[in-house]
Length: 522
Image (cartoon, rainbow, N blue to C red):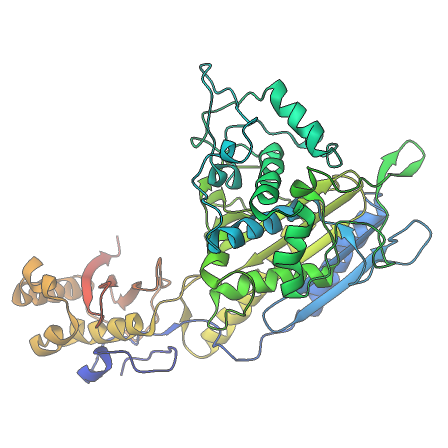
């Protein structure tokens, strides 16, 4: 009998077919961690690796202090402080405030979406509607009209400007207006390419002020931070547990002065603790779950933040972390697509005296936040390595458990239960074709594309070409590129069959694609 592991619940239409007969090899596919099941703790090896990684950076003089936390949807799995939050003092804790720098952009974007969702802001309106002095010159000499959406997605055409912009935080509205009137030159036509622009987010901060009638810092605080109970602040010294920022000098670390709130606070002005940033990430991530959690943004708006709106060129990966297959920018967040773990949502923050990084995997809810109190220390590198380590460890544990149960895992994207049942049922059809069963599970196009009698004959020929089936497990791993899709393999004596189903987009779900291809041994 076909063996199948899937989520609980009866899918419409498919389970009523009653097909359970199969003399072929068992179809054994595990669809990952069941919701509500206990999540694995970090292994001793993983904890030791994380400790060595971050302590090594302190020992190597990368920063005076650092903090890292690993978490999932159930809670914090690990938190560690290293070195000193202030030279000569104790190590940072989960409540120590660090400047999170460009991680602030996710809060800026969330505030814009809150205004959009309230009907006060059109993301596709040109920014000059609120800031008439912003009239950038585009390639070719014309005047561009970047929209709010284009600035949010780093496609406003303005040049990458990190070193310059990081020193502009405290400028006033009057100084900013004078700057804009002097002129802005674009490097690309707005809306055509990715270009990481802090100036664009400073402009967005002014849009927030002019739409909301509040200062930028007040708008973020009142619309986002307070409703969520988050302890992030724009002024140092509010908690009494603040990390001091440093840079490296010829004789050791040099303390750096703090810049106060101003127009460029929208690009990186927030201070937050690990505890606060974890709460922020978990609220954003909850949008992917059945329990989306209440708050100032709907689940749909939060998911909108975490999707690629502008593809970005490849960047050098962190040490020991593979390059993503796709990299892009959402609303105040980067999104990377990896072959093994699916999407990773993240943002880094680099500022004089500080480095921050937040990063999570929506498929599993596992995430990492990390801070260091040295300018541009690139704490994103160890943070990326830590998340990859934890995800790999969980994937290995799931594969081991599946193997022990005679199952296989299907990758980062999990098929629907209906898709799994369709795979089970069509596996039965491969060994014992039945027109009535086929008619119950296939969409109307399947018989039109190829009549059942002809399809059954081709499948029989494919089975014969691989010498019939064996009881040995297949050498092929199941593949799933979408919940409505599954590829699996059936092992024969002289090769294997590659089997594939894809479901219809409408209910009740039916199989619209069913292919069986012989892969004989050469």
